[in-house]
Image (cartoon, rainbow, N blue to C red):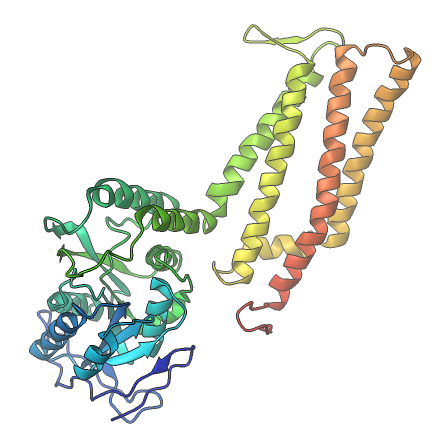
Length: 439
C-alpha cells in the first residue's frame, strides 16, 4: 500500500496498486512510453481516469469497474482517481475497495473536485467522466487514441453521438446547451458542438498550461475557452450519453449553472461585454453632440427631415458619459484578468500601461476639465449679459458639451488612480492565490 500526498489542499487515502499492463497498441499502432514518475518509484502511468464524486454510492462501483476493465482489455497502464467532494454515503468506501485512489476536496464544486483530481493524477493522459454512469468508460480507448495522435484536448460530443431516451432533459438538449455552445463559439472561435460534455480527455501538460481555477460547473466552459486561447489542438469524438443511474436528483441546476457559464464567458471576453457596447455608446454620443455644433446658433439642424436641436445634444451627453464609463470598465476587467492569469499576457495592454502613466493620465483629465470649464465659462458670461434670461439653443449646446467634458475629465482623473493600482499589480505580478509577487 502506498500513500500519495496531494499538493493543493486535497488529502489522499491509501491506495492499492493501479492497473499495470504492458501497453498494447490501439488501432493506430502507437505504443505508450513509460518514464519514472516524479517523486515515485513506479513507472509513469499512461492514463488517469478522474471521476468527481459526491454521494454516488449507487453508481461509483460500476464506473470504476468499467474503466478498469477497459484499460486492462486495451493494455493501458492506468489508474482510477476518485475526487471526492464530501460524500456522506459509502462512495469512498466502495472506491477504495475497488482499488481506486480517493482524493478528498473539501471545497465544494464540480470544478474544485476535478482540479484536485487532475492535480493528483499521475498519468500522462487524463480522462474525466461523471461517476453517475451516464458516460460509458468503456469508450476510453478512443480518447487515448486521439491523445496518442497528438491532440491536447479530446471532447466527447453527445450531440454528434447518441443521446439515449431520458438521458438529457429537453430544455438542456434543445435550449441551454445549443445556446451556450453557440455563444462560446462566437466569442472564442472554439468550433465545437458540445461545450458541456462531461467526458473529456486531455494531456497532463495541457492541464498545467490551462491553469484551470473555476470552482463550479462553469469549469467545463473554462477548459474549452482556455484551450482555444492557448491554441491547443482540440478534437471532438462522438459518444453515447446514458440515463444516469442515481437514486436522487442530479447536482446540476440548469438555470443557476447556465447563468454561471454565461457569466464566465462574458467576463472572459471583456471586448464583447464592455468594449464594443461602450464604444458604440461613446461614438453615438459624440456624434450627436458634434452635429449640434454645426447647427446655426439660433436654429436646429435638419437630419433626414428631423430637427436636431439642443435636446439631442443632451441625449448625446448621456450616451457619451455612459459609453466612456463602460470603456473604462473594459480596461479595468482586462487588466484584472491578465494580472490574475485568467487570460494570457496582453502586449497592447502592457504597452498602454507603460505609456499612460498616472501623471500623464492625470494631466489629460485635468486638461479635459479645464476645456469643459472654459466652454461653460463662455456660456455663463453671455448668460450674465442677458440678466440670466433664456439661452439661445446654440449656447445651450455649448453648455452641454462643456459640462460633458468636465464630467469626462473628472472620471479620467479619478479612474487614473484605480488604473495605477491595477497597473502596479500587473507590473509586479501579484498572485491573489498565494499573496506573493512573481518577480
